[in-house]
Figure 1 (cartoon, rainbow, N blue to C red):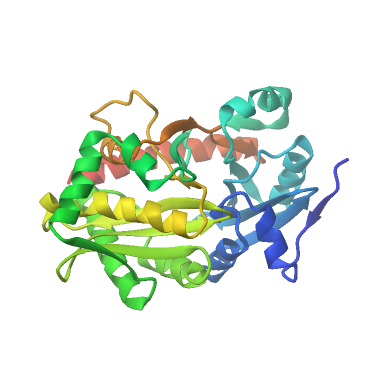
Figure 2 (cartoon, rainbow, N blue to C red; figure 1 turned 90 degrees about the vertical axis):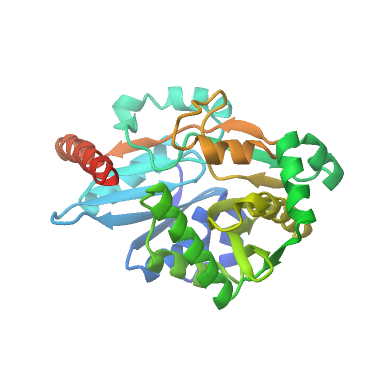
Length: 335
């Protein structure tokens, strides 16, 4: 039996973060979730750490667990998680590892998924694909590998005197949040609320989180909140204004974010999520996938989303309600 231990709050944070494979597994992310009133459980198994959260369902005495962007858990870890889920009256625990599928096919098959109550999820929270960029290349190489349209847009923004500033402070966050929520409303995207973003920023701002903003004169055109964690640059959140869209501020902002990551020691850029290659151009995510693709990265398929079922009967009920909720949200977005 693998030695699995619950990690206490007094654990060495730096040592923990060295093992964490993604910002969502970082100690600070867990602390931010605690501030939101969410239960956090951290586990250690040999060289691996796992940080999961437990979320209460409204109007019901049940919870859902979530293990985002961890390493792929062993059979022993899955059994440990299932027991922890039972203690908390969980229906299931969603597991979304941050690993390429090519490296894990045999491991997944060996788990004998159905017998472990570990099944492919029908409602993933993260996309199965992302785009990554090698930041060990020189700036000249990176520019050369971009799509010509992206490179042209960057030079156009520079020529039109668009400038990018780091503003990892109160004023920068307020500009970022305004542009982010404007974009959410415009694109009918149901993202996290203001309090969520405020808490994440306040907890990570002197560690992983940075805010970059593209300006034309004194008008903010586009803003990103980026993370740099364990030598990897991430682009999770962004927003833009409809003003001066012809100045291509977002293209220059992405390029400056890449240079910012290189300057701070990042060796890889993980763009957080995308459609797969050869995507449908009419898909709602086609626009931001095309935008990210323009920077010359490669499409990477991740292992996907799985549900570790704790309560089989309630899991069926939950899935039916979830489908109905999705239908209602789609109907709402049309009005």
